[in-house]
Image (cartoon, rainbow, N blue to C red):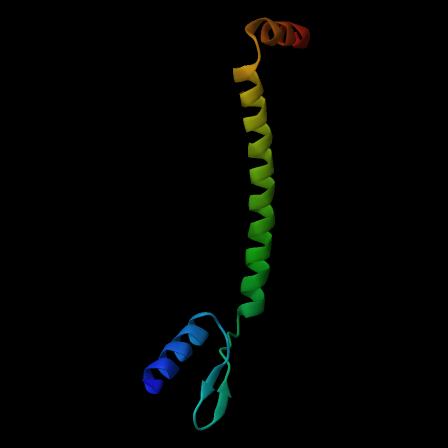
Length: 82
């Protein structure tokens, strides 16, 4: 039973990136030589997607306002833009 528990905790630790304890040599760390570059790429992609989401939220807010406002007020706003 204790062996199965040790195997399970080792699997969970390895899956989530925690250091894995080895019975004979101490602790084994999972390393990635390109980790810094991957983090930079993901950070830039995250910023780009965050900007895109904010623009889409603004557009959705405008569409919701158009759909819920009375027709007379919407027509008046369109005429004011002309």
